[in-house]
Length: 500
Image (cartoon, rainbow, N blue to C red):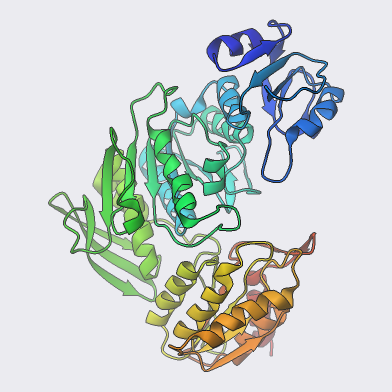
């Protein structure tokens, strides 16, 4: 419990109006969760203005509010005023939760592709080496006390610090988390004291939100600020950067210790580099070099892009000063990440792979990876989300035309757009591609029918890549969230064929 007076004394940027002795125990950005001893923070967001809900928060019994200095509406409870309220829910929640990040080893992962798998790998490695590790990311939140499906890749500030406090209270020494560009841009992770920040790569994504690829990079680069924040008590953290990503060459890492990794053995500037990679259908063997020492890593994960994920996770362990052999053993035991190159053997002798790939680069990486262990045809089923970046649709159609033998264009999460028009934009890119490998392209708007059709068309030696939704168990059509799980569709089809 903290008084408003103490908050105002701690943060000179805030102006207090009202009784300084009023106490609060938590921060909320949703007026529906307000009540006694709650501070409601009104934030002007991407789609709504939290100031419109100040009356509802007061009616629900909140003890105080945080509002913008230029908001002139009546407030019937004590108020903290800020020029920009966006960073303050996270900052105040951190204070109220006792800065749990200071007591944890916190690893944050950002980038266009590979965030989820890298975070899972870091979790598994730190579980083995450090004695436990929580997880926050696209698939789930795990605190040691509970595990639940994740509504957001990176939660809002009050939820974030509450989950970190839960990890600390449960005795976990570490946390691995994905940090999205949205969270960085919206100040959801402000004041978070990272021990290591991983930048995996940069490709085209979220350009419905960010005005340009350059703005997207600027948002991603804000993760470096979390390694050297003014309100951290522990020493500055380490930047773990993919040296093979040209976009990261100009990042401002002044005053930071950096560990750069590369999967191209010819990059002599990298601190950790892959010298040789044996990519098998059932796993991956890597020979690496770290500052003159040779290391060997064997993993059950498959595919060339998992070389990057495994190398990034190992780089985190080395950057944190952990024993290299223990890190290698922890990564060797890491399991399958849900919906990330998830493999299914089909009764027909073919195979199916379900993956979350939903950007041009990610789709290309999955198709190239699966092509390396496919003796027959490579078949792809995918779509693009509605009310999102339209520019990538044609690009993904072109990727399928170049890299697959057979293409099925279908719905992803159409949201409020007409599904047929989304498919048409993808098909336009497919038809416009001149370097064509794909011999056939079908448009089937119904995703379940498209997946089942592709599976039925596959013969022995073929691989069906089902891309875009991965671990998700729903489809958003209009404003409805409907039950749909690519993996369940595959399992159901396998069961039907096996039963004859």
